[in-house]
Amino acid sequence: MTIPEIKRLLDKYKRNEISEEEYLQLMQEVADDAHTSAIKADIMETLYGKVPDMGLGEEEASAMLTGIFRAGAADARRLRVVKRRRLVYGSLAAAVVAGMIATGIYMFQPGKQAAPVAATRQKPLLPGSDKAMLTLADGTVIPLDSANNGALAQQGSTQITNRNGALSYNNAGNQTGEVMYNTVKTPHGGQYQLTLADGSRVWLNAASSIRFPTAFTGRERVVEITGEAYFEVAQQAEMPFRVKVNDVQVNVLGTSFNIMAYSDEQAIKTTLVDGAVQLTHGNSTSVLKPGLQATLSAKDDHFVIAAADMEQTLAWKEGKFRFRNTNIRTIMRQLSRWYDIDVSYQGDVSDIDLTGVISRREEAGKLLKALEATQRVQFEVNGNNVTVRPWKQQ
Image 1 (cartoon, rainbow, N blue to C red):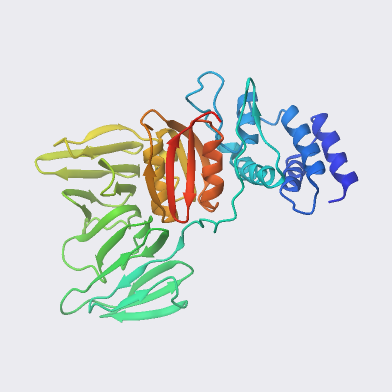
Image 2: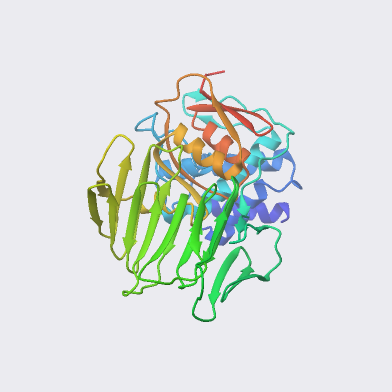
């Protein structure tokens, strides 16, 4: 884009006449390495000084320009929620922050100056991708991240195919002989999808696994998981579907639900999207309705039922991180699984709760810079090791 074209868009921005498409073009120019620092500074001065009325409140627009996360005026210890309809601007805001860091432009908050973040040349912490390990019934291990599309193996009467990050089990006839079990396991920094022999679909989050039969026989369909998985279960009333995770069993007929049961989390959480499920743990049994979440912590012997935050629960499946007043330790556990990083802490971070949303396709460095923009927390990155500290004014 030429300089006159940029100035034309800036003029339209000031008059609140800019379209969404033109606005996106303007934001992208900030991250364009072809422009000088002076041009970028001119764009940012205009953008930062005045925000057009495009469906955003004043605080939300300010939060957008500081890279998703920004301290709210009503409470310096909380951040405003970024609305769903403005998610597209969130990713661009992260790009703006990256461009400003590269050109030495620093952000200011009213009344206090944010310390500039030193630029580093270390290897970027890349996001996770579609990769997993498939273990067949005979112990053969197939790396799915490097497997070619097409047929992978035959298990009894079931053919296994792999295509674009999704595994499929196609049963050509009645299973005879001993039931065969396969396992799909994702590493830190991996995710995968699979379609079971009955047509049920499963999404595996990072550091998770599922063990399942290659063909369903008998009176029920039973699978076992660790970590986190989202299910869309094919309805077969005559053959109930059951998910086992630790000491919890989820019984369903046909439904969509999410289970989070990481060993480093404090509770097992089952969230129902639609249909109905019955949860069993020891002598405790609960039935979930759509929109509800059942939580079972290690210290309790019963399920706690409450309304679910669907956007936050399913954000991983949608390719996002979404936090609502979430403690930094919980945030960092999610980041450690997706970016395969080791996290340590210095100082008390127990009261650092943040709210925001960002794509899981961003490099970890961009997300950490956005978190630092809140002036609540700061990070030191050394290779794959990230140290978390409370913010200290420089």
